[in-house]
Image 1 (cartoon, protein in one colour):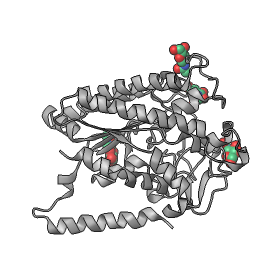
Image 2: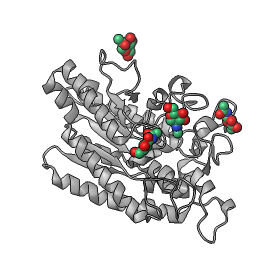
Image 3: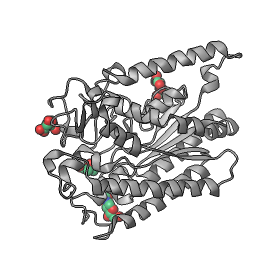
Length: 371
Ligand SMILES: *[C@@H]1O[C@H](CO)[C@@H](O)[C@H](O)[C@H]1NC(C)=O
Ligand SMILES: *[C@@H]1O[C@H](CO)[C@@H](O)[C@H](O)[C@H]1NC(C)=O
Ligand SMILES: *[C@@H]1O[C@H](CO)[C@@H](O)[C@H](O)[C@H]1NC(C)=O
Ligand SMILES: *[C@@H]1O[C@H](CO)[C@@H](O)[C@H](O)[C@H]1NC(C)=O
């Protein structure tokens, strides 16, 4: 049973109804906006396929519920949050920037520069051979140059002004750099001082978020949506590896509260930072907004029945406790119906969970894309 399929149908019905009523018709061309995304495996549609990186998912059972049942390098059974955004804005689902078939003979409208295991912290990327956030920004500059040569500067720059820029990173900074050794009081990373507090680490990431958003703005981006952290203590592999909340047994597989507290704290600071950035830039035309993965995901996990989910703390792939990437492969047993699972693998939401989170953020997305 798939709640999103039903709602998607409604979306199309509404679209055609409004198309029939409005004069002149709101054609797809009128609605068209590009979507550019940056970040980690919550966003990457397959850039890592082209990198020397163990973080890959371009094999079954990944993509089991995607278009043509194709594994693409998306870390889910189907579409990701920005794919839903792109489709909503009248585009196709995302294409990876690294795809050699991605050329501008036919202009793609949803391009992702994201790379699984990337983070704001340069040492997160260094450990994993992903494309760092700053390199993703550099790639966008190259892309923009190509777009300008193809369309002419004026039209290309207008495209970029109208486009939605979506940024989702930070999870891997905590997962790989901060909690890399499964011990929240120490860190496995050489470049992060030992015993740095979560607050200090949050501050260092926030500086880099600010840098990144400013970098986008100076490239001409005006509609920028920045994702907060998901409730990191509810990610299945985190539950498996981190010491449980004091007083809880590991077997209960409850969300790890002291880790969720970090997500909550970071997200509050991030929202302040985004407001400050919004105020820093000329009001006219600039929209910088916060996309919330925390409350929607917590709500789904706490009230799965309301969303037609039945499994909230294990992934659909394998035991659901630890399998991610190569550990979730053709030989791995998989659950029958991923739409009953909030998580597809031990770290990533299922397509239906992404869709539910997308719906919770729809008002924000509408707000950003308004002129
Ligand atoms: C980084 O790249 C090298 C090859 O260049 C590869 O051997 C290694 O496994 C990669 N590390 C990760 C974590 O993907
Ligand atoms: C450009 O991309 C299209 C598909 O999007 C493909 O058919 C075509 O061969 C590509 N052209 C080049 C020169 O790679
Ligand atoms: C990671 O960074 C360190 C220090 O900047 C550098 O010496 C090392 O070569 C980098 N490793 C990779 C895999 O890029
Ligand atoms: C495939 O996944 C299983 C776990 O389900 C793992 O034991 C095995 O090593 C994986 N195979 C490869 C080639 O990574």
